Length: 391
Image: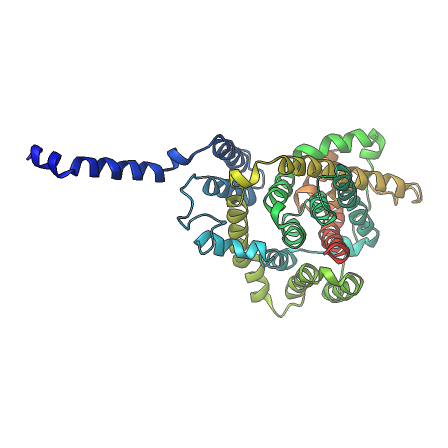
């Protein structure tokens, strides 16, 4: 029998098949880049699970990084960038900007704008924090590595708003979308780590202890009219922000109208959860080592960090400037200036935690929610402005 197998060439046939099988394994196709990206994915999972830093974002993204960096033989039709693959169909919602407006619909359905309506001047803090976006845009242009459109997409990282970053980069810089999205979500998760040192450095002990008047009660009529008036004002000013602003204010109207509770519950619950899973997993999977590990991607991360620092600095500094014109008793605690970025509600929680470190009786959370929700609107308006003159 052994002589027959040898004479028939069966042994060589098996060897050839084993050799072919080996060439299709991940072990054969692995590169150092795949190893680096897998480590990054594991770090994201650690931060999301062990540290509980934005787990709803970092867990899907971290596992997506693992999915996107399993080495495979090209042409199998399984990669996220291979036409006709399942992952490429799921990624369609990212590259065509479908998922971000749906996220904004859910955010609108979950957001209470009462804190902003009770003290409208807080919206200017959210506007001031957007300076980080335009500051990063100018820095990216100054490097000479990016086109004006790419620089605009990079700048939006300063708003600390992942969906907005994905939406704008899908229009202006699709090749950099993975790096921009990962940077935006990373800095959103790192808000409790990045912002407190900046807040403490820019404020005095006296300023940190400022107590603000309790916000006034906002009527249901005011809350119902706000999404309608807000939508008309912002979209007449920046029509290119319509997909994001329209869905944000529509979701809020579903919540505040009082007659569409089921729709608001769906938008702010199951729908946003499903889209968050899809957007996190596919954005993570888009970080394939061969397309992600480049000098331009590393530069995007650096510029994103700078833009986030500038945004936080601008928010806190603006409040200090505003206090020069406010009477004693009406002054604003500068510790809520950090909340002008769009990381809701984490930035507002940081305001509360840092403020209470200096005065346990000082409750800043409700005040900080004003600029925080204003930051959501502000980042969408900024994206519309950039899309308007760069798109």
